Image 1: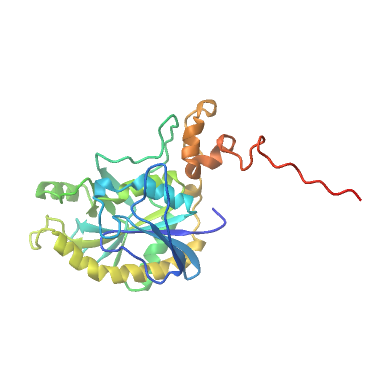
Image 2 (image 1 turned 135 degrees about the vertical axis):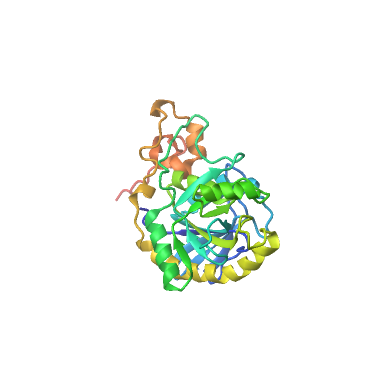
Length: 309
């Protein structure tokens, strides 16, 4: 694990800022994948270094399909982020997950079609293990923190990630329920995949806002309904962050720290230097010989000599 823990918080619909940051400052990051969703708010919470990013941008400007996931995660990694807490508004696919409840996700099902979900390519091939798509140790810490502050939380659940931006049809909603889906959302799957490739500990806190469109005794989901429940959820979300973040420095999980150690298949002799340099924050430690040195031999300053006595 990195010697210094830094927590990244990704805010979903209705959560566009983070309160209580000491040493607060705004940070803009340029990436090889374009601009992130917004600038980052950097600071400390309970002495723990943190950065916050609103997934949809302040003012909610990005469609789910348009979110620059690779730019967001590349930027997080370049800023030194080691752990990500991702908050997301979702629809419930289960009777017992009522609007206002939180679910700390342990599985995903991908129904997206139009989104890049990997940093690999351009001559570099990697296949990370994704059987357990979130950090188990971090997930357990979030569940414990939620219970400690009295938030109604479900320990584990299947997040169905759909393309959007339209909500589900009734037929789709019923099919997802038959697949044992717990909640449905439009954003977190790509984050989880990219975080694993970036060797960042990642967890999703899904905040239920509605029953999608399957429940016979509840109205179909609308933006107004989502935002009304989110307004109530935001207070609990911020309380959970305040409770959980101080505990994160003690979270340990070697499988996240070394996710790429046995994932890269491309033979070392043919790995493109340009791709490694583009992905330096992600893969650089595995190919140090392909990165520019801090001081080239040609331009190196002459060694200092002691003056003669």
